[in-house]
Length: 327
Image (tube, rainbow, N blue to C red):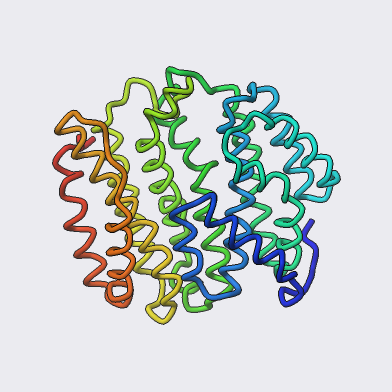
């Protein structure tokens, strides 16, 4: 149940912790979230850290699947005020003693801080964030038992996984954006499915990018009997839908546009690296910090122009289309 509160009462130390931790746990979202208007920046930053806690439990190689299920359920119960947050923090911190990522362990230890920020958000923001966390936690609980080196059963299961991990985040963002901008709410009406595609496009990119690292720890989120070329084709479809989503955001909402454009543009550039590695048969390289900085500044201009946004995606997607297999 959401707790009504005043966003202006959020503790400055809590907000400083949120900002500092974003810089430690996410290179991409640490630069995209501050582009949003302050009320959205606070809510989306809080939501990201809550999602990151769920994701940390999922990715922890030191935990067995049954342990992940218990911790995911306990986390959700704590967020919904059904169990004390301290119970989750103590159980999860103990379980993750051997987890190598110190920033993620620190985030777990400060779960109460992030939840306090959530409770200072307006009620409609809390409702959207808690819906997202609920679907994500419950969805990941189903998928914990499916973790194996062979991958997910089929393409349908792969898309379902991408939904519970990220498609639902796209839906949450749309709810937050629509509450902030009545013009966007009118524009996106009856086109909400595009929000799901926006989140799925980002997640598919992450799965493809991290597939070798996942396999090294004995896990694969790729669908069985589906080639990388076929997955790139599916990613292109999601990217096309995500592009349409961005164009529905009014130009007056410059921060929202830049946030989405930067996140999606970096995903396209990452997929370009994967496409290039497929052709050369070399391990894909990460996007350089210089490329990220250049694209960041490019969005200052492009976010104000539908033509420039379309032109970027047309040019950037060409390498993908050359190696993708059309269904």
